[in-house]
Image 1 (cartoon, rainbow, N blue to C red):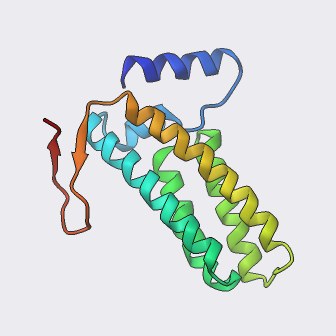
Image 2: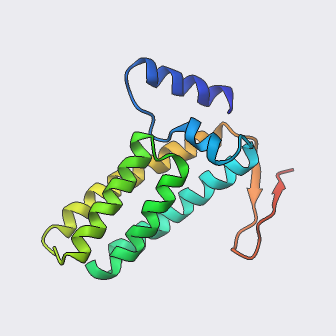
Length: 149
């Protein structure tokens, strides 16, 4: 883990704050490999933004499937961190509201999810800023990355 990320994590823990993304969980999920951690964080950032946009445009019942996907993605980057867990919890709540036909509760659930996703994406980008620079080749057909010059 980059030293700056570790120091931020330690300062938050000392202040009694849970991190938005649990960097220890993320390190375990990525086998301690920084390049994989970069890929996972970048994927979460992109996917969370895209899924949130689709949820906001979808009818409540259609939004449930997108919320379920977002829930899994949030858990992958650090389900024990408050922010990522908040994203997962907010996505699960929105999914329940959508499935239970709670149209009146949907806007509030979407607002909570939007806030949680925003906080988690900011945290992911801050962690990415501390990582070794790499560029990810876009598209699902490409899984290789190339170093930036």
